[in-house]
Image (cartoon, rainbow, N blue to C red; front, side, top):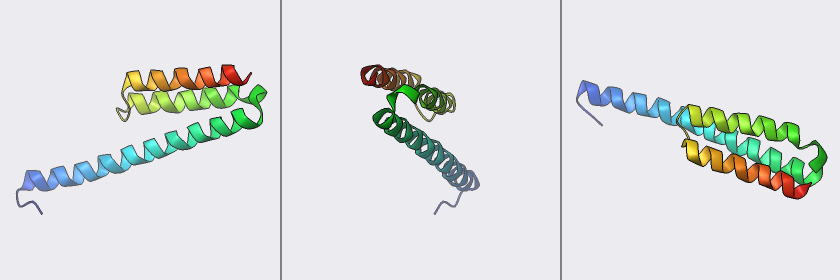
Length: 86
């Protein structure tokens, strides 16, 4: 446990940021799983879910939870998955 005031603050700030990042990552993974389920079940109607998933990925990248290149790679792979299913 830190004794210095600034170190105590850093522990609090880090905990808060970690919680936020974990929530964003969890929501992102959930969105990707939903997209994959829709693609498997009904590829014709998966475009709307792809849009929502892409939006979630962009938000994660904007918040710094995910690197922008990783976000673009993930979006491209999801679009490719949809195209293959159609």
